Structure formats: structure tokens, C-alpha cells
View (spheres, rainbow, N blue to C red):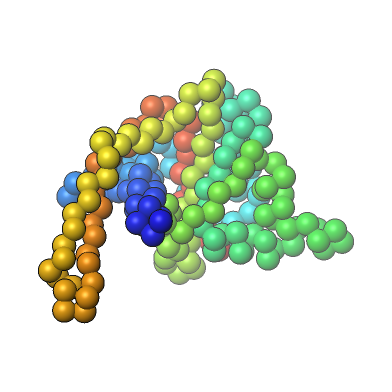
Length: 186
């Protein structure tokens, strides 16, 4: 189970942040310009209005039929900032409540998006939609997990070192169904 969780985390990281060098696939976010994915600078505090503008771009480009067709991927720090920002003090509705109530789903990840950096600290977010039943991203794996047993490296401490290798690649089938928001401040 530990190895499965480690492989899952690293596959997410490679699929979104892969450099395209040294055996890594070109990640969807790291390689956005090469895939023709729109990148839009927010350069402001995370808010529903920043995400709403991206949703409107999807709808006007006929990539999404409604806000409910859009999925959003954010860092936990962005959730923290948005959930801590009260939109309506009388009702207690936060910016995060407005986001979740308007889009299809919101996924938080700490391995699919790079940690916030800069001053003020900012990160990226990914918006996607599944127009016409066609997924915009494909992650392909070949074969099973190659397992390498090493009984020698940790033998002095009574350990056994296991290494799992997975062969995978990433492809973007519809770049119009993806948008990367940059400079989303938490």
C-alpha cells in the first residue's frame, strides 16, 4: 500500500509538473505552452471572480456549456486563503463557498501543483472541462510495475530496499478544454 501511494503521488506530479527531460513526460502545467494550453495571469488574491473569468472564457469558446461543467485544481494554500476570506459577513459565505457552489468540482493537491513561491506567495491553478464526453488529458502506462529488490544496500540494518518503476506518458487531446491560471495568490 505504501508503494502504491508513492507511485500515485509521483504519477500525479509527473503528469502535471513533469519537465519533459531525463525520462519524465512533459507535464500538463509545466509544458502548457508546448501543448497550446491557455495560460492567464491572475496576479491577485484568489477569489471566485478570478475563477469566474476563466469559466466565462471556457463558455464563450464553446468548451463548456455551463459553470457546472468546469473542474478546478488548486493548492491547499489557495483553499485556506479563499476559505478565510468572507464574501458576505452577514451570511458567512466565503470565496471558497462561492467557487464550490458554482463549478462542477474542486480538487486540492499538493503534488500536482508546485508550492507557492515569490512575494507575495502565488501558485497556479488548472481549470478543465470534459466537453462532449472527451477527456482533455490522457495518461498512459505500459506494462506492470517493474519491481527491483535490493537485499544488499540496507543489509546491515536488516532492511530490504524495493524500487518500483512505471513507464508512462502524458498527452493533451484538447487544449481548448484546459486553462492554467498563474499568479494565484494565497
